[in-house]
Length: 168
Image 1 (spheres, rainbow, N blue to C red):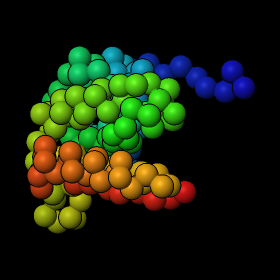
Image 2 (cartoon, rainbow, N blue to C red; image 1 turned 135 degrees about the horizontal axis):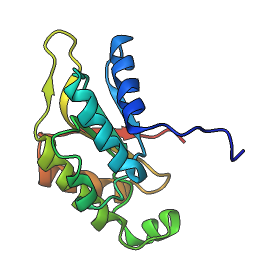
Image 3 (cartoon, rainbow, N blue to C red; image 1 turned 45 degrees about the vertical axis):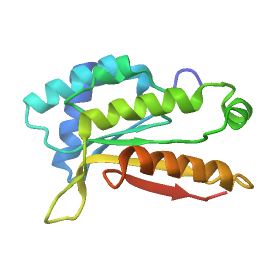
């Protein structure tokens, strides 16, 4: 299993981004990319210099450091963070950490600072810039979900989108 992948240079990653644009992709969705931020940053800078205009989506669990996210300032168009739990008990049980909510909300604040309120393409109706916070409704945890939703509304009002998921 360990030899299934292959190394890709920052230049090749930039080329892949441009190839996706040429093939008609609606966006480039970077899923759980934290451990590759320096390489992604370099590839995005290269590809944007060569004409990349697709929205870049950063899809994350939100357990991120603001310092790492700041390296992406001006390069990410849409943040798609999770906000999993409010309670320390749920955080400890499911993510083996006591500080998920604090870390995640600090990261989400940095993401919002970078992208601000949503902007949509008038032709396609697709988001071009902004943030969609995902929250997975856990079984028997509606009180925790209500705290999450209250926090998001009190903090961001109607300047973000929220996706509530229940696919268990």
